[in-house]
Image (tube, rainbow, N blue to C red; front, top):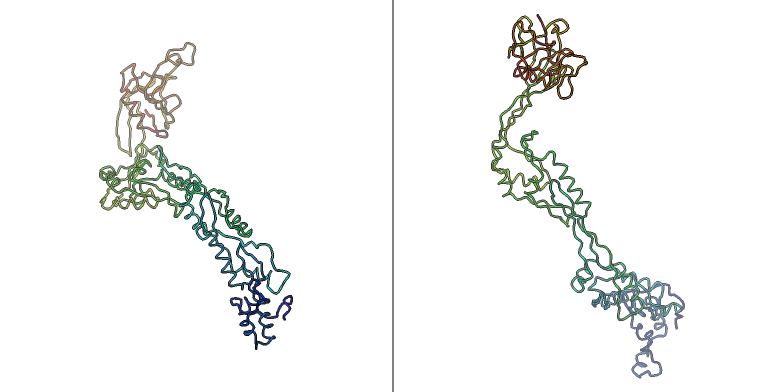
Amino acid sequence: MTDLATKPIDSADDGATTALDAAAFDAGAHEPEKRSRKGLWLGLGIPAGLIAAGAAVAAAILIAPGVVVAGAPVGFHTVGTAADAIAKRVADAEVTVGGVTLTGAEIGASVDAKAAAEQAFSEHPLWNVGAWNPEGIEAPVTIDAEVATEALETAAPELFVEPVDAQVVFESTAYVTVPAEPGSGPDFDALAADLSAALAAGDDAISVEVGTVEVPAAVTTAAADEFAAALNAQAADAGFYLGDKRAEELPLQTIAGWTTIEADPATGGFVVTADTAKIEQSITDLPERVNQDVVDEKVVTNSAGTHLRVIQEGQDGFGITSTDGLADQIAASLQEGDLRFELEGEVVPYQTQELFRRVVVDKSDGMTYSYENGQLVRSDPIALGTGGIYETQNGNFTVYGQLTIQHMGSCDANGNFVPGGKFDYCTGNVPWVTYFNGDQGFHGTYWHSNFGPGARMSHGCVNMTIEAAKFMYYFAQTGTEVTVQN
């Protein structure tokens, strides 16, 4: 007879058994004391060498007796039949989880049965008597989380707390984030490890404690923060545009009223849905709101062409030619997260008008002449200094300071005379002052009405009517040239 402690050189197909599998090696069926005549007859004529060869082949392809993998007895099995037995054991195992009993297949439990069977044969072949009857062998169980979740959510819904996705909402003047809230669910890794151990131990009734793990929301707070920030960053530029010119600003509050923002678990982002009916209602009078005539910019200059001050802001002209399909166009733009909405129409850019202004004080005429681009625009009678230290000085000057009202002379804060001061007079609340030469300048006069040729009434300033002084205040800008001549 073949020595079973000696490993044969070759093995047969690991997926087949021979007629000797049960007769020669199944201990429960081998009873030599009760041989029947039929059995003896069947043995007649079979050469002893053939029987020995069959035993050697079986020893080379079968797993040793007493081997149990994942709770499945696989002794005297080939690798193929052992893999089937292991897989079936795991699939059929009844597992109590969270108070409900399900099969291994129902919770998505599985093992690499082929690898486990190959390991069992490698470590415990039939030919190696010393490897017979080992302790139960553990095969790592894996859990298909999707299958397990579906089964347990139906059978034991209390094991789950659904996560809440982050949201983006509009509050007051800006978009803000409503943070995500994590949920919880069974710890499938721990469940798989406990099930692996229970199967290896040969437990028939398997009860597994279920731990929980945090389940993050599909749409995170960070994603909501990023989306809200992207919308808020456009607040300064949001509006209707003709080319690169903004025809009308739009506050975020208006735009928020047109849209619904929803979390999208499939992408981890957000979906913007626009209400075209609300948009249509908002743009009904858009042409009336947006269309405007062009207004040229006006800039005061000096003789060198230096811009002294813009006295009239320029305004482009706008003309919307059509709003057909605009609501749908705005809706599409909103869905892309773009808050700039293009209009169909024409932009007429404004032009800049340069106004070279200068002022001439003619002492002989007793008049002040105001010129713009060489054209006389106004003449006003004046009163000059009384002479001596109070003479209105000749020369070419430039305006350097202007005040709407001022106390002149030695005055206190209330416009009352202060004795012993630099000046021997106080004139309070002098209106519309335009300085061009030290303490000499144009100003309004409420204390006399003597203006014109020969009028000498001031301490050196150019006295004017209050209305004329106000005109001068707005006509002349800092840097405007003033000539005082005889």
